[in-house]
Image (cartoon, rainbow, N blue to C red; front, side, top):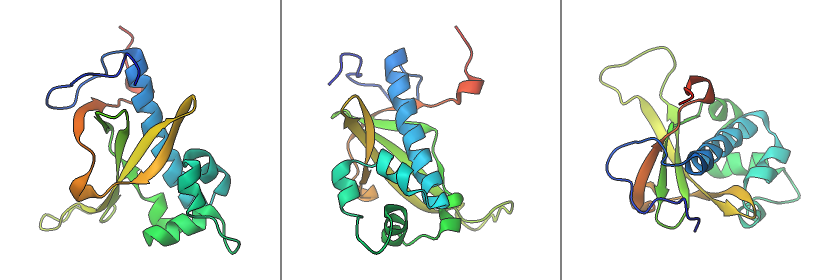
Length: 162
């Protein structure tokens, strides 16, 4: 585990405590975003680039590409994948992995007071791989990794230089 990895973060979202920590969380967030865009575009090349090799191996067959196989596994259409977004608060655990929550909204443009706003959540686990990061897959939302902290990812265009 890197020296910059936090020992504990305390309650609630916070800014990263170092540029390296923020960059790693931002990378995890961007990987999961690219994953959903690739599924929505049937982009097999990006799916190959963002998944761990052992995760990718579970989705390879001779009949279809990995993007289609992942969508089939998730039970999602291309159109549904295009509507999925990611929480901008990235969770991290004590083992050096990030958890990025992906969400499918129930509807667009209409707020129903008696209905939950989210339809489904996919907790995507991002782990170190070589000199970078890759998506390992999903974790069971009910027994997800022990979260030790949160990093609030602010889009680069909204960050102010200090």
